[in-house]
Image (cartoon, rainbow, N blue to C red; front, side, top):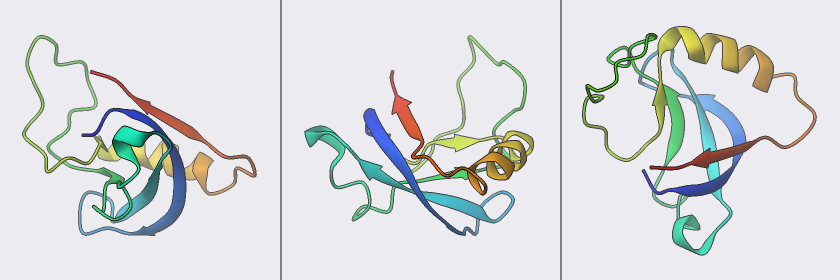
Length: 91
């Protein structure tokens, strides 16, 4: 994933996880092409809902992914929020 700050954007259909994704709008020079590169927040069944450290997650194509269970909770909140939501990706 491109690190940095993102505004979580429009909810959309995903072919991954629970079939929900959110478009990400890069807010910094290093990630301003996120939307063009189709960097989205989505769930993926390969992502555990439990801490796996020091193990690593399966390889992704650059999108931040969360567990299906967490995305269900997150989606419930994002669908009703009236304020912009910031996602900060760090290493």
